[in-house]
Image 1 (cartoon, rainbow, N blue to C red):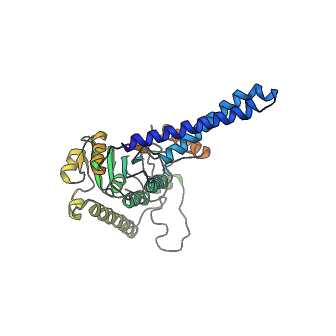
Image 2 (cartoon, rainbow, N blue to C red; image 1 turned 90 degrees about the horizontal axis):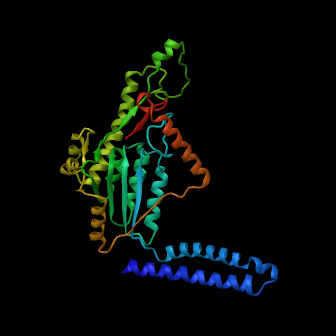
Image 3 (cartoon, one colour; image 1 turned 135 degrees about the vertical axis):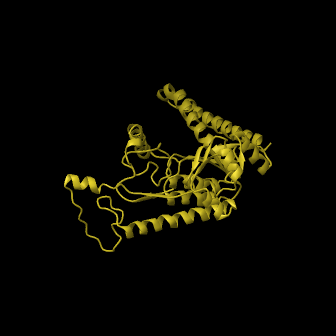
Length: 334
């Protein structure tokens, strides 16, 4: 009933604004004008009417919203800049972590939104950006459901564990609760090419992980300690969000599972389709659900930049499986 009255309110606002604009335009440009203006009167009336419809539609949408659930998508690798820092892109270009967190905040501030649906199709990504999105979802004031489509792994599961419920499909890939650090080792290649490594640093471990030199045992222990610390953080966050014992999470050994197996293990709450998820939200809210997708609004320059990354991905995807694309330094990611 509420959605019906909101739609009626929208129509009334749009119709009223349009009639007012047409009447004003007719009076200004047709009735009380010179002969020259009469030639363009009808055109100006139509233009003014079109502008009024556009303005009124926006006004009506804000005053009489027809949605009560916000959907925010996490697609592709999770990075700070949306495209990753790899020289050869290894995944589709998506929204940045900051943009995703910002859209969740906008949904939380929208008085029409009563619940949040986080759609996840991601293999994971950078640690801190994943944490930022999770924090935004966890802080949302209302029911939150994470819905895994194809893949909800690593950083994606980090995010999902901050929601009230996790849903997946039976063939969805879920899990990979672990952290990886990587560095290319080109020391032998540099020797064969006659390239020597010389670097000036202050601090014993400032150049730990530099690819142009062999890693020392103490450096390996130092970097592994950072990985272990991030893994402990990951396990703690999942245990907190899923009410699981840390030992159960560590026993997964960062394996991935199909959705139905993940549900048996308690990593997923329910198996179902998107329609099943909306039915669950209707039960939770006690009313009919209408979902609005919250997406970042980018300016022209930002869209050009994201388009360039998409072209780079298309070019690099064919050789990504043969090239170590982790960059030239030591990187941590989930």
